[in-house]
Image (cartoon, rainbow, N blue to C red):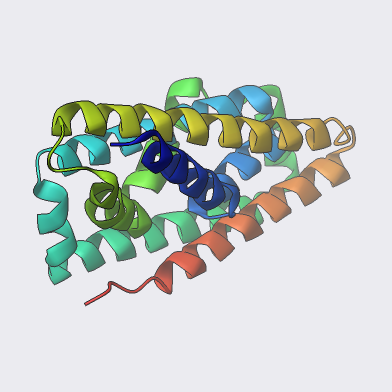
Length: 207
């Protein structure tokens, strides 16, 4: 893999990460409702799922997942259902319940687990790691080393982007000093998650 190829991959990864998708919207929602620490935990969960897909792609199983119509759409609709469920849960939070939750935010492990599930059920991850990532690999070179370089690059780029989004959401949360504002943030977070679920539903597998 040449340096130019690596730069092209890093640039593409950055652009893909900057476009708000399920992962970004989930991190924004966590940052708005529970602050930057929760956003970081969500980011770690998302990157953990990416690491799993990266390992699958490295073993060649990514192409099999991408080729399987049933597996692809099962993962897709599980992801859609999970995101919409999280969004509805936020939309219908009662004001009194929100007051309690703001005093006792979800544990980092719980948020990390949610982030992992959101990304693991995102079919775009299968498309990226199963179809796009191998295009940057030079078969004549050390394939394992190239996969590691691209994998580390992907993790670093996405963590930086998600941290920026989470930090922005955490800053906005500082304005939520009144219950009414906090409730509005909760509703916005719920709406973003539902929008992410609907966007995921529109993803189609390339034949």
